[in-house]
Image 1 (cartoon, rainbow, N blue to C red):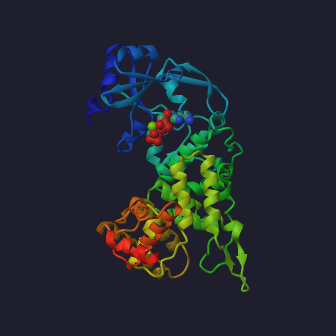
Image 2 (tube, helix red, strand yellow):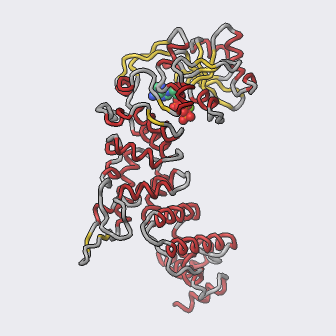
Image 3 (tube, protein in one colour):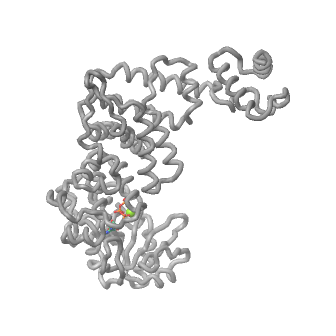
Length: 438
Ligand code: ATP
Ligand code: MG
């Protein structure tokens, strides 16, 4: 690799030419060692923030008090941070930041050995804690004493699990899983959410969620899911408890955050809705509504965006839909209820849920696939399935004397007539249909 042509290399060159040390550091060096393409390139230097600002034309004082200046090179942003020492932690962030003199001091404040490496312009790697060795043996190891490092900053509990799943590593020490420092303390909802999302978007999210539960961490920010652990379903289709069934569904979901969040939430409401029939079999009538409400609680607590909350609660509420009679009309009714992007995620959720249940599921899977195909075909041929696709609108109805709430009602009746192929979607046909109703 030609390191001199790496993104941001001009920043290292400029700093070096002005007499300062400068290195790529953290995630990008780790990813280069793993032959992965880095997401972004962070730089560390012994130049002070004022100097960094003076050396580059286009800068943003992103976290100047903490030593970070964003340097813009054309449209690309690079975080340039002065060597730092952190001291006097309160479990969330350092109370004080002091600039350090040496690269090794800066590397020693970083969380894991594989994240504590730096690389200069010639591609030479500084690796004082043997991050490369740990990467080779597939181990995630804290820099320094793990319990102390976790006490300093509780987010490292979640980062630990996140990196284990993202990079498919082994814990360096199983005992950590049962330690008493594993309370998240006063971490902000946003920081928890960001790490939680990264766990969910990793290659093996089900392993991460299971680990969170075993470490007693899940119940601290998602008690609704933790409560499902050990909740037996008393039903022949369910040989797993709700928690383990949820993990099986999650494992079958492709890498899409909304899909995976919906998978985690889809059965949360089973605890509240369990009833037994005369044969002692468990049922959970209407649990999808309870699940949606519990999903909303969790997502509001973790401050997800409103549109994400709306999508996940919709998917969860719809996950019990069955498609016994797949027809053009039933597919159009479904398309009218859900936007097509949500519908595609719903099918993926339902396929995963169905496959994760015990017994022969081929009939259920076929029905979902049939409905999915029917919806796709209808979307391609541009047929009417919502009021806005009708050849008449509210104005047309007002012109023939229909007013107020009746407009919406009549449009819905027209749509149903078009969907069930009782009326053509043409203006005169639709107006005739209305006259016939009167
Ligand atoms: P990603 O690829 O997800 O961005 P990353 O390793 O770059 O992974 P960041 O959160 O962007 O992770 O952090 C950049 C670097 O800063 C890390 O590689 C690590 O060296 C250091 N770091 C970040 N957060 C912490 C923390 N809480 N404690 C110690 N070091 C940290
Ligand atoms: Mg990063």
